[in-house]
Image 1 (cartoon, rainbow over the protein chains, first blue to last red):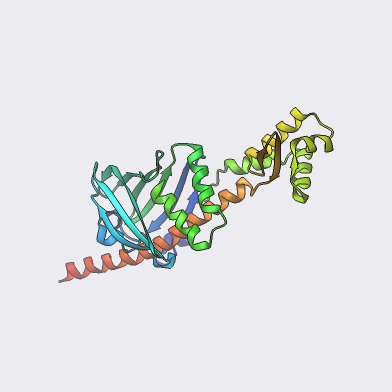
Image 2: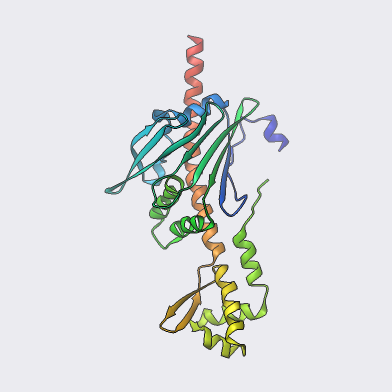
Length: 166
Length: 118
């Protein structure tokens, strides 16, 4: 721990996952840049699209419309194999450099609400990606979706669906 | 410090803390069975067996299907396994995303430096 603090740039940043309750999932990760920069990478479509759909997952982001301000909307379209999928929702709250809150409106039921916060830790940023599902059943459904006996790629796609589609 | 609050884990441990329920899991590992057959095997009332099966079902360790008037029990995948897989899928996805994000951020920092130097 002390070593990591004395030489922050050299320490690889670890992705941590927590389950604070049965309807929540939290992903934590440190970044070696101030919140101003990290926020920009989350809120500008041309930057966001470069990392949100990782190439290693065999999924490409075809279109990425994001109006990142309170009340604004987003719509992301992914290509996977020969098919495409669209994800959409609304930004409930946007505070530049601090937090982004959005809905995941694809399903018929009420989707999860995602809150991302950017915390300044002396020039570095702690990003907290927090997903809250409306019910326990919604979480179980998302879990079943990612655990069915589908090929790995589809399971990863399901994970993506769970993130983006609630 | 990794904090891991898992309702699935609690349910699984609670379900398996009982010898009869461990016996039910053992039997279902060999073959599916109806609640009636399980009650007979374990010399228990139907109501008593239903309660045990319900606890196992809630933990995801057993799944039941109704066929006509008979409720058949079989081994479930385990709520814990399902939850662990879900968490793992998130971890893989976000690790990949954040590695790519590190790169984007490094480029942004570089551009800022170049901009201020010029």
